[in-house]
Image (cartoon, rainbow, N blue to C red; front, side, top):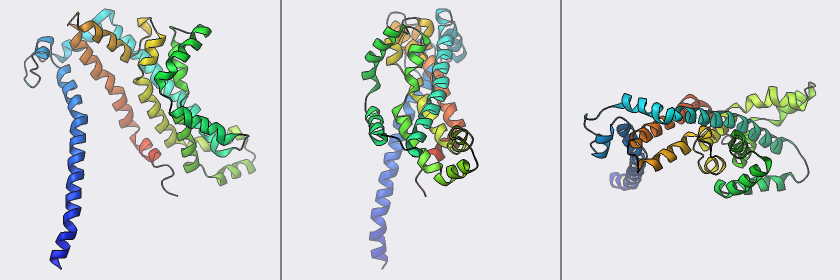
Length: 287
């Protein structure tokens, strides 16, 4: 009996150990670049080039921070504000639009609804880099190239967010509640704003976080649309500085410090909103 029990437990223990090893390797693969970034951001140029990251020599995080915001007349601060404006405002408006469209696909009947939703799903599979040139030509015709709107408007429309909005609407908003609101005399817009949108809160936050991450890390579209440095987001500005570092090595410490600061808003957003997006990711998992 004990021999049978041991032979039964051995594959389970082996499988658990394998899973633990895979998880540990994945965590190391994810965290080691972050650890390198944090250590490198605290070093001056000489310590950075000597690869002596674990020693206390060359420890100058405050000096690197001052150099970062003083470099090129304080351009980094402008880039950071641009990224916050593009990402936070764009993600908020984009999430509202996506959830509203997903709600309409879920709750209303209209002609060719499923065919149109099929186009939305097809658009999810189109890489954003493929759309950059057509968007540039359209922005050029509209006279929006090298303006704030050339980057802001395209990020408002996210097919994947519309798909998530429909899933969240199906999982969080019962049809019976909408019928009760209509019986009470509420119009469709009032029902959506006062009833449905509150139920869709976790889904709205989830779509917002996806949008925020995508817009904050957006690089190719601003590179195509913008030539004015004052309009650059952080990603494009740091790329330009990194390209200049091969000629001017003083850019290396500020690029690393700038990259570390660029990660902080995303971490802060996920920490503050984690209870919403965790529940949002389980939408429709239980009846």
